[in-house]
Image 1 (cartoon, helix red, strand yellow):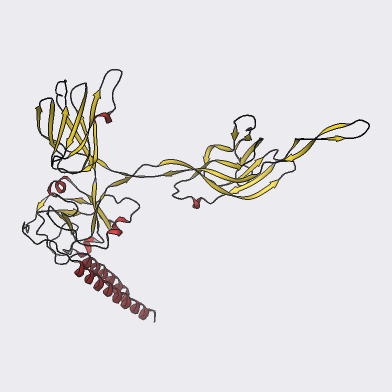
Image 2 (tube, rainbow, N blue to C red; image 1 turned 180 degrees about the vertical axis):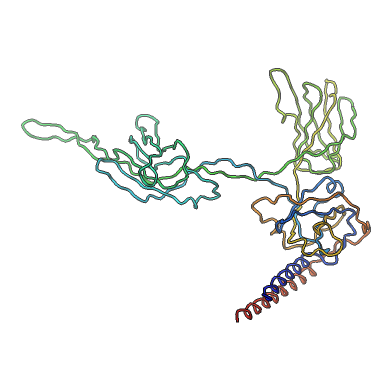
Length: 458
């Protein structure tokens, strides 16, 4: 049992050696004026995330450069900032999937019995797939058959319908049989009556005898079936970005000639839309929106009309822009010959961003004075370049969204903050040396572990 304990210890040691290699070892937090403790839920995964809040936006000019994640060992940890996304609720999608014809039997009465099936494991991105019908594929024209669909045993009737084509006379064709209710089985028996028909040929022949008799020739015809496909409905879920309102503070409002100028702030949070409203029952105003540098960000017209019989949609009052951050904004509304708007109100919204970072077993290495999980986010620095990391691809390689399950505490002042503190240097060579040393150490640990196991086996 002893070697097993050693292996566990060595594995933990290997993790912390690698974790140290991902940090910058001697880098200080002095350039960061603020920090927040990060509370990671119990039984969290190896990747945690928290939502960037108003404090971090307000105090940090450039994100992600102005923030850092510090682990329990006091080292900076790899992280990325990404747009937070959620899984949309399931919605049904119908698709056709080819089935394999496993049997084809002609019956004495001229009907045909076709067996077809498919493996539902071959449905990509499948989620609760159900069969709602099937399609009989053929290039034949001018036919009319009755079709019955049974389960794989051939005894229980699932559905029946018509398989027909009248294209030489009218634009009418049906090659599908829809089921009255979805089924979760994927093997079927299809019985098609009168599959082979004796039809009159356009050719005639003359039978000579006492009197010449003209007879129309007969021929046997059956539509060639090229395949069977199942009509399958599956529930799919899609990712969509999370949007949230941001608080708006109107800084000033003034009338300049025939223009109303409203200055406001949304706390330096990302902004992608502003909704303009007022107490007037109706209005239509051309607008111009500028950021703090005076750059024109958007222009157009916002309007509102509410009567007993008609109301404009809420989107008519929305100013949409590309995601932008600005400490202050200026909105100009052209009144023209109209009175200025009364009681103007603004609502802002923007995307939600999260910080995603490596948080493997955070409590195991907590030493000294640490936060509840041993992790902190430092922020508010100016001119700090992001340190290099080879682990950002790991943080991005999640198909499912990483929920912001971690929480951050109230803002705290960094007691070692120094506005003239050290800046982040180019740690590229140091980083490579540390990574090489970490990899070599892990190799030695693995070799040592294998030897220990061999001794136990002996």
